[in-house]
Amino acid sequence: MAANYLWVRSALLSLQAFTEKMPRVRPFYAVKCNPDPVMLRVLANLGCGFDCASAKEMATVLDMGVEAESIVFAHPCKRPLDLEFAIETNVTRMTFDCVDELEKVAAECPHAELVLRIRADDPSAVVQFGHKYGADPQTEAPMLLAAAKQLEMNVVGVSFHVGSGSQSCDAYPLAVEAARRVFDQAADLGYEMQLLDLGGGFWGRFDATGHVPLEDVSEAINSALDRFFPVNSSGRKVEVIAEPGRYFAEACTTMYALVTTVKDRPDGSRSYYITDGVYGSFNNLVYDHGSVTAKVLRGPGMPPVQPVETETRLPSTVFGPTCDGVDLIFKDVPMPLLRRGDWLQFPNFGAYTIAGACAFNGIPVDNPDIMYVWSEEPTGSWEHSVAMLRKGADKDNPALQAPEHHLCFVADLHDLESIC
Image (cartoon, rainbow, N blue to C red; front, side, top):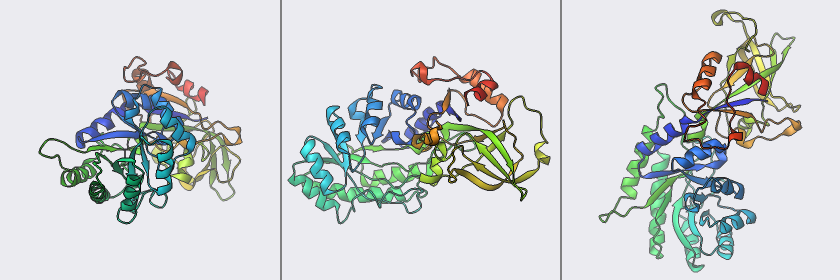
């Protein structure tokens, strides 16, 4: 199987950048992006809220001591069993975007604090949601607010999602302006809404200087909040939250996959088979419009190969471990010659990867071994990675506080090979 190297401190650095750049916005981590228990516990200990979409996600964070008030049940079309769990655990803040959902919640949870989700697509986002969720703020929102009023339901705010991996800084101001209009429509009906949920869409990679580049989008959001949701003379202000997932999870994980088989093809190209694939962490290639960057790491204890500057490179295709022909990572990419026992390293691999994995073919790619390191992010060097693991595997770090069975700290290069 594969191994994931999770740089836990990245969550702290990302949170510090987020709250520094957008002090009015409290992040509610999108659990679906990566429900790793250590990541969740660190974020909970640092004061994050959580965006949950199912009973299992709510139970996971509640079991860590998170208060129900720090959870938003952000699924506009809820399954009955999930709604029942929310009611039982007093998770009352939940989204809706249609009359049927409004009537469903009114019948089962009349004390709900409803958040009306509006459509606010960024056309440049990697994954867009407007075709599936979100009421039109001009034509549908007024009708939904009127229906909620007739049902005597409490609508406390507005949410939107510009799309996962949003590319445009203009998307948020436009959405905030649309939300302001909905707030005003609600006020005309007697509602006093107090919550604005900015949704997700934030990128989460570190730049060359080790910082999270949030300046452009944070300036756009802060300006829009000051314009459309200013603090009034009495100091009262709307509560603003966001639902970043990729922002926290993407850069925290580097994945390592072992080369198990090498095939020389008649046309001079090569095929390689590795220990993870599209039924595992690489499901993001299918579901999340993902792309991968691979770095070659020579297997420990293996004889040396050509120097990097003179290495032969052949068109190379990399397959995952299952029998499905679709289990393809990339095709005809020039790569150095690999051997059975070498490794491929995939950085920035924490968002919408292992969260969507399964055990197709009986191959447990949905349950990789995970090495948690606090202090430093991984590099391409085996030797440096192991030195960091020895130095950074601080089981007593107070930010972790995770059950021992979740932790796997590597002390030697061959330990990584043995668990895969």
